[in-house]
Image (cartoon, rainbow, N blue to C red; front, side, top):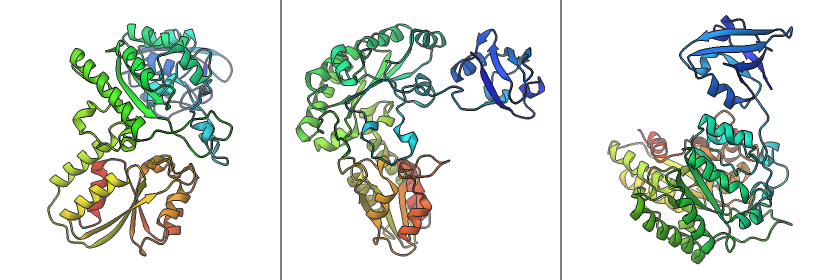
Length: 441
């Protein structure tokens, strides 16, 4: 297999060596190039022998000596992966994509399970779709870390939960990767009465045996929307069941830390909220390796916010009415931080608005799943003319494409609310800086 070069940037190494738009890259140093992993791995040498075919179907070879910076070669491809994205072959009973409402953009219905995205962007994969060739490539290239959606270490239960006959046998890959020195971050999406309780304890113990290759375990509560017609019957966590999850993780960590000197298992912040327990201090979370799973986000947010406030000037003189919108889960914690801010800076008058998620259902409480319509409805009539309205950028698709899940834009929110919208980068320091900038910072 080979990959077509969409563009060769001007004044770059490959351009000077005669490669042109539309050429096909066949191999680097004799290694076939099939996708982005092959390209970036084999192009990292200081001496490259490129084999390619041109538009006249003539095969050519070029030798390049350079510093190993792959981007300086100047080759651009049709897609980042240089290949189609690998779709998920599982039919998990808790799949969030299956619970999406109709009428959203097509990309929101795609289920990815791509090991390359795990390496480059931190996506979680299930291992069920990996071929033996892909496994060997991961080991050969020593791709590390890999993020794995484990869910349970019980092979039979994993087949039941993921509705894939390969789900149980693919757990053996964890040991193969561990033996190859590949680091693993793992997650367990917990469903009440299915893979929690004693099953959770078993999974923690089995994953602990793979330490130090397994460097973290995140326990995340199943996310349930109101769009579950004809899906597997599931219910969410309540106070006592959430407390049981935290207790089991704490018991595992206490034993594990005594033997290995560190804790590796963590409950997502949502479990503490559901259990009505205080969010632990930052020391609890080690190196915060599971932040993207919502583990330790609130602790880090508070710590960074308070540090920024401690180092900031003591006086600000501009009186300002400010609105700040967030999800139901973070609402009490954001409110607490804003109260501290106003105690130090009385010229700030901040109102925190709890946005209820009507698109997915009120049980979905994270800010990252708030759509534009729900944000507008949550603050409509509550902002004075030209009042500043702040919300986190986690509600938007990306900095390059700042649209909400329902494709409304930031401009739509500003027009419908009459507020001056300010999108704040996620993080405690960024939140403090945004607030302080409005009162004369």
